[in-house]
Amino acid sequence: MTLHPDRLFPADERTRAIARKLHQRTADLPLVSPHGHVNPRLLSENRPFPDPARLFVVPDHYLTRMLYSQGYTPDQLGVPSADGSPSETDGRVIWRRFAENYHLFRGTPSKLWLDYTFAEVFGIYKPLSGETADEFYDHLSARLTEPDFRPRALFDRFNLEVLATTESPIDSLDPHAELEALPAQDGRKWGGRGGKVVTTFRPDNLVEPDWPGWADRVAKLGEITGIDTSTFDGFLEALRARRQDFIAAGATCSDHGNRTAMTVDDPAKAAEIFDKALQGKTEAADAALFPALMLVEFARMSVEDGLVMQLHPGSWRNHNDWLHKGWGRDVGGDIPDHTTYTRDLKPLLDAFGNDPRFRMVVYTLDETSFSRELAPLAGGYPSVFIGAPWWFLDSPEGIRRFREAVHETAGFYNTAGFVDDTRAFCSIPARHDVARRIDASFLARLVAEHRMTDDEAGEVAVDLAYHLPRKIYGLEK
Image (cartoon, rainbow, N blue to C red; front, side, top):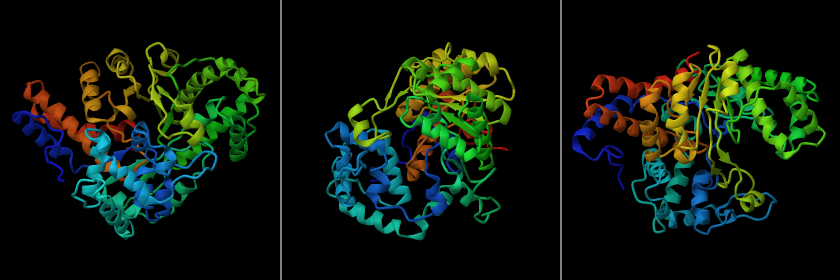
């Protein structure tokens, strides 16, 4: 198996040659990862990775989802059950099941990322299959014991400039404090403001009153901050205080995974629902409304403290009840849903959309909204930027369709650059490589059609890969 140097470039030779030159402008740029879900303890503790199955297969819902669709249950793949029922613990058995079914991923972004990781990170230039499963497993296991394959060593080898993790307001920020305490390396510190690893404020589990344990989490927020959270005003005060803790730990952004993009500006109604929720009297309509009310409150906080607001709506979480009940959240049972923005965001944008202190990056899982709503919104408000295709759309074709849908209305500079949005640490360089190649290909077509010059396309390619994410996510401070 070899990674073709022209992979993902256009088929016709003239445009491919242009894409190749454009990609050379970005191939060696540092990686900027302003949104992702890598556990910060991975880097603060810097322990060897576990066995190959637990590194690649067990935590990756892209992989377990595909295998489940073909008849493998999560317990057969080592995914821990919600009730403690036995799951497969033999890493080699899990790996063999995955390898024997690797053909299922042909043509998918998962195979692109994995092939790149096997070759470029671990030096394996053979196809993975049932026949080569044990050879892969032994090679990977041996590499994972070496110091050069510890997380912080790979971080530097990947040429990662900054990596944003994602934590809840009630999560411990100790790993970030431990990173900040590490000696600076090459003039750069590991944690804190301006560090290599920064946190992101993600309050979803405190704004969904029907999420089991909500009232307990509200109380815990009060314990962490020393603020009485039994009132709505106290709840908001505690959230503001916690945001300051996150800012001290390096945060430049908040992130909001609401089911929809609906926003409502009515603090009195928010206080009413909050009080009812603490009494256990929340109705379904209230539970759906409270996140919309809180989005406006969080936008108000962003104006005050400067955190860039990211909005990731449109996922019907835990759609597969059987998977959710058996194995919990984040095991592949989420499905994209129809999402609208123009009407839903208007209350928030009426309040803050023209305020120079406010910045919001909006993502979608609904491709139909790119040209119809998001591109015009980004072109109509100085505070709105379009986030990269993510999750189900983070693919070569998805990125191509995204560029085609938004660039004519919003241009390139109302988009926010690429984010890898991953828990799979070793796949980060692979994902950025795919995005840079697809952007080079798209720009090459514009050059070939005489819609841009070579120099213009080169500048745009570098901006999309590096300068825009640093600027828009506040990483230049």
